[in-house]
Amino acid sequence: MNNSSVSGQSVSAEQPPVLEVKNLSKTFEMGRGFKRTKVQALRDVSFNLHRGRALALVGESGSGKSTVARLIMKMYEATSGEINYAGDSILGEKTSTEALAYRRAVQMVFQDPFGSLNPAHRIFHHIARPLLRHGHISDQNSLKDKVFAILRQVELDPEISAFKFPHELSGGQRQRVALARTLAVAAKVVLADEPTSMLDVSIRIDVLNLLKRMKDEQGIAFLYITHDIATARYFAEDIAVLYQGQIVEWGACAKVIDNPQHFYTKLLLSAVPDAHVRFDEVSAEQAFYLHNAEKIRQISAQTSSEIKEVAAQHFIRVHDFSSLNQ
Ligand SMILES: Nc1ncnc2c1ncn2[C@@H]1O[C@H](COP(=O)(O)OP(=O)(O)OP(=O)(O)O)[C@@H](O)[C@H]1O
Ligand SMILES: [Mg+2]
Image 1 (cartoon, protein in one colour):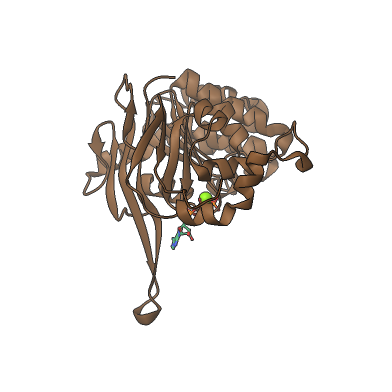
Image 2 (image 1 turned 90 degrees about the horizontal axis):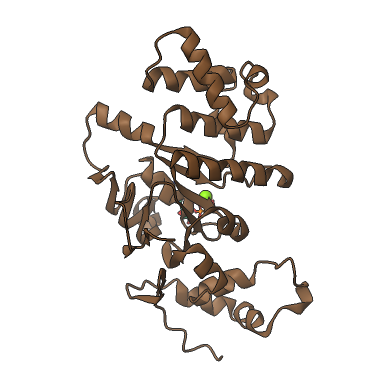
């Protein structure tokens, strides 16, 4: 559990990060004139992604998780802040070679794999195309060998799956194809936005295990966006809890989940049903956070730039909860 760093607090970084997000903010402006409104989707978000490690970005709906991923993908422009890949800023003017190299190195995998697959093309094409565009494929035979090898890496039987269309596969198989494409371009960073939430519960663990192997065996750095604390704990080394665009708590996954320190994280975890505890057996502590939910949210939403290291590899953003009667 070393070389992790989130929110600018480096925790014994042994290797330089692959991707660095520094003080990233994003404000969406909508409407015109009197009807102009602003949504501050992200405030001062910082974290690092490292080779062969996963950072889970957790938070409720609307907290800004996907916005983080879209900014890294350059689908949106940042209002302020920095994003560095392999030590260089990705923002600003780029040559087409640089832009292509970045697009190849940093890939996104979505909740619904259908959206990223072309219904008119067979699976073979989906893997062959990035290989031809980016790879060093010399002839048709080696192309077929390579496509088949990649499909095997994501545990699809190439003889069966390669010549099917996306709609002929199951949801889990389609997500495997989406992951195979990241392997075809030899991605260094994968931003996985709720990659298992649309899949049957029974196959979620298989896809999660595949992600784990991609991380461990290919050394891919993952940003794992999820609502699901249990899968975050299973897959990721590090975690950051996002609330209203601000990371309120971060650090080593086990530390944050087993011993949350920020009131918002405690509230979030209190709301997670514990498989071992009946719902009518909510502890007095859980009851306190649930009872004060509205106030905790209000206070946690305030902008704070004070950061406290509560333990090694464990940080919180400081908010004043003294008005709550404990
Ligand atoms: N293109 C946009 N234009 C205006 N507002 C946006 C846009 N994209 C996101 N937002 C707003 O930014 C905030 C964060 O949205 P985002 O989609 O990042 O949340 P999320 O954490 O991914 O939520 P979910 O768990 O539901 O996917 C929300 O208030 C959302 O309405
Ligand atoms: Mg989202």
